Amino acid sequence: MLEKFKDSVASRLGLERSDLCAGDRTLGEVLGMSPVATNSIDLLEAVAAAIAENDLEDRVDIPAFTLDHTVDELMAEIERQLSDNERLPV
Image (cartoon, rainbow, N blue to C red; front, side, top):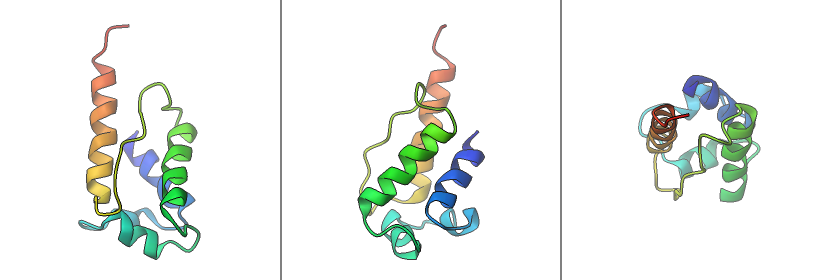
């Protein structure tokens, strides 16, 4: 699930997943690399659209993050939320 989410975010930013998820890249660095995103709102929209595209709206909230946070931190928070929601009783 997380891999498809990463693919969705990367695609919406006009990047390859390998570029998005390389090392401890900050969200600011990703924004600078993106040929389509020009500001943090574009980045936020890419994350929100990837959540919707992967039908995660009921399982994931958009995490609060700054451009100094890394992609790894963002993805770890998404993964944590997915994991927490799998444990909830139905």
